[in-house]
Length: 177
Picture (cartoon, one colour):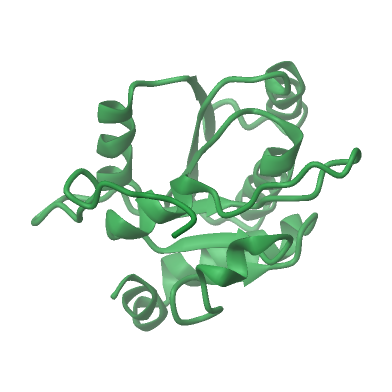
């Protein structure tokens, strides 16, 4: 077992009212999480006329770069960097979100994620997940069965995957059960 997860803390909440088309992501604001790709995907969705809201929970060295990207794409009303939050509040976000996206990439210096705990937390909380096939995520997620795997550094593919999860109830139900 690579990781442990307290499955008593991360469970779907019965009767939870999820915010339609709300994308959640959680992680340190560093290069390996691929947050610039998520922000660009939100710009693509907005430009397509697709209503989306995105919350990115975390803190880190890339914060200023991400804030500048949000300004550059004029996404201040759609993308929020919440900063670091206690786990209890993150669990509430898991219960309110419509989809979880973590577009991991291999950093320029070779650093990479293994299997991010937040993917397991989101899945255990009943959220459909989208991530990349960049590193070990395919050990956790079979594409189309447990979530969607996309190519790294592909905001277009990420935007398409987010839209599919939001618009295709059959796909959404398949990847959360």
